[in-house]
Image (cartoon, rainbow, N blue to C red; front, side):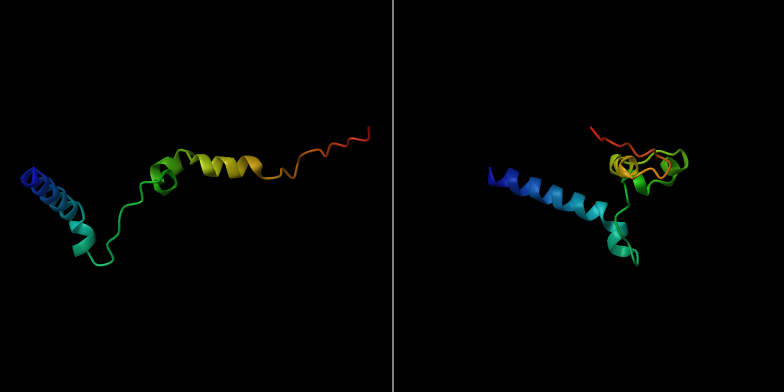
Length: 71
């Protein structure tokens, strides 16, 4: 049981090191931005994240007619 655990731990450690090779070796290396707002192709198509769409929807429209409730 311990042997299987150690082999699994070793495989996970090797996998983590291999996935981060370019980040560790490359000067100024960092993880890629995989968020919707970080993708230039999606921005060109006008696709944005849910947070950005929510902020845009909550902005006050300067062309909106002010409603009065005098009742």
